[in-house]
Amino acid sequence: MRNFEFKENENYFMPVSLLPPGKDGRDALVGAHYNENRRYKVSYRTDRDMVQKLLPPGYIAKDPAIISICFAECRGIDYMAGGGYNLVCVDVDVEFKGKRDYAEGSYALVLWMDKFYPILLGRELLGAAKLMAEVPDAQKLDGEVRFYAAEEGTRLLEGKLWNLKEKTQEEIDAGIKAGEGKSWLGYKHFPAVDLNGADVSYATYLPTENVIKKAWKAEGEFHFIGDIDWKRAPLSWNVANTLSKLSVLEYTGAEAWIESSIYMPNRKLI
Image (cartoon, rainbow, N blue to C red; front, side):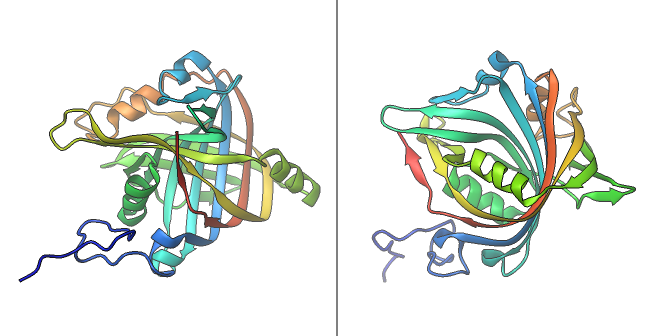
């Protein structure tokens, strides 16, 4: 009798003897193609010192400190057999200065998502701070787009955009150029099984290739609910309460866009 054996240089998720290693488009271990993402973003300036206290080692908040709340409806995902999910992401503009590596981009303080499969991949593979939540499709009515995330019916945050005006190709190109050289960034941290320190703890670099099909500039606002008792949201109460303390000094912009994306091979930052 023989036990299950790991093949060298293959990638496995638990249950390791039942989930096949990534080989083709059925598995995000070899890359992930998203046919269409509809994204709505509201950004604001906040207190830089408060943000810095929430960042893991190596990360430095940009000055001014900009937080972006992004709601997305992601559809046509290869590894989900053409399915999709919704998310709300809380990003902060940062730079990473390590012993060897340097990177600029957006660090995700938290991502609330409504499907387990992308949460599993994001946490175990990418080092993305993903949590389970109720994230319904955006409500679109009378020129407004509204969204929220909730846990067990308790709302964690709410946002809306209005006065959407389609961008010209020149405006789209200018936004793409402004984002050149920047990437989405994470931090992969798994505690030791005996709770004595960590088995894994390092920053991650998570590039994507995006093709913007259409985009709009807008006005927008959002707020974290705050003062949530842990009994009403056992997983996310402290996350939402902490983020609610990041004061909105001024809104710096709002926008929406439709894109297709390919998530590229990621890597460890040192």
